Image (tube, rainbow over all chains, first blue to last red; front, side, top):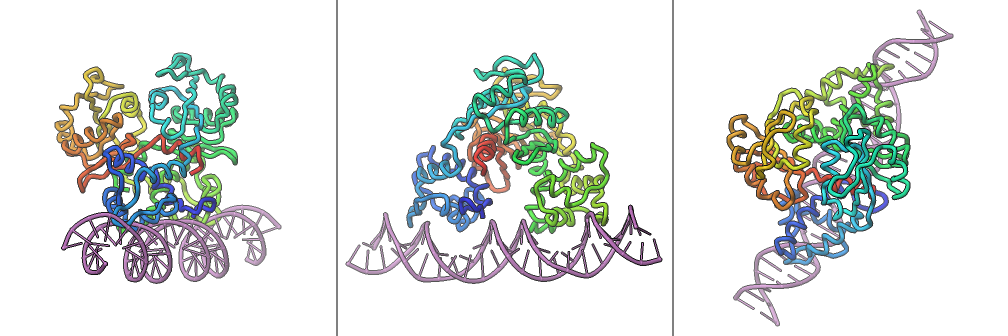
Length: 206
Length: 206
DNA sequence: ATATAATCGATAAAAATTTATCGATTGAAA
DNA sequence: TTTCAATCGATAAATTTTTATCGATTATAT
């Protein structure tokens, strides 16, 4: 149970999946969906689906119909905070950093990528209209846009150093793509996005 | 509890984090680490750490010392199946697909990326020695290398179609980067890697 | 208007996971 | 050699999460 919201962590972890599913259904023109159908399509249990939704959505499900898709989407997005926009930066403008920089799906999640930063002069410039600055401009940018969150997309060997620079610049939340444990002071939160580990888990059925 | 192994799903989900941490410690020349130190460094509880490790590692912890890092790493990697190598393919050779294709950290996880595939003729060629083939060659490649797992890195609008082609070619495990719910027949497993959702969760503290 | 079947929400039970407690072990120091 | 403090492993308790049960609701068909 998540003290602040009264919604379990397990439920919160599943909400993005509901959103993905519900948006797909909406795109097909469906208006209502029952917990049983959702459960079947997503590989959950119907009771679990109802429990997940009960805490997040104000709207109750209608017997014989199920849940109103549009309302669910709105409530889940609101709950997850996809409404208020957050500015983020990327450190590392190699292949991965640039790919993330050019991804245009962040807006729907209330995220705006302000810029990327790189140590190498050859990386400086712009990608699809988003600027790539030298690391020297990190602090200034973070301060000006009041950025709290950053994506770390540098090679493993540079990860801790780049992480330190981000924190020094004022970043307090880091999403790291480097398979390297990061030491950070209290107050800074790190999450790891280990693509290789995810893939290996899939391959090996973990 | 994970029926087959006797190790809880929650524990399995944490194992990559242990690995990341332990490898970092090993790189610094440390040989032993106690559950208390691990817990503190990783934000877990000491009892939890001991419980996690007890099922995965054959080696017991030594009072006054803690756990032998090298042994833990070996046992966790073995448990997660990082030893036997799996071939995988990538569908979609845009910025993200190419970034993944050029990532050289997969080997440590027992993963070998065979090739990427793309519909667009301009994407065909090679990236850092890895070939990018036209979609027509997907089935042939999957069959020849007995590939089971694939990475889906195409735009949202093409996701379901590309997914269908992968399944048609014989892929049964898909790691999708597209924020689109995929309908797949039973026997096919999909995992979603929704970067925007992960980032939003970090920003909003979910 | 009534019966029916699908569906929900609430409550209870079961299972999984985390946290607490405490005696046992072990190397180091007195 | 004895004591001591750090650390573990095992057991138990508490908490969280999932699953089951069942009466209540509501559109549809008769």
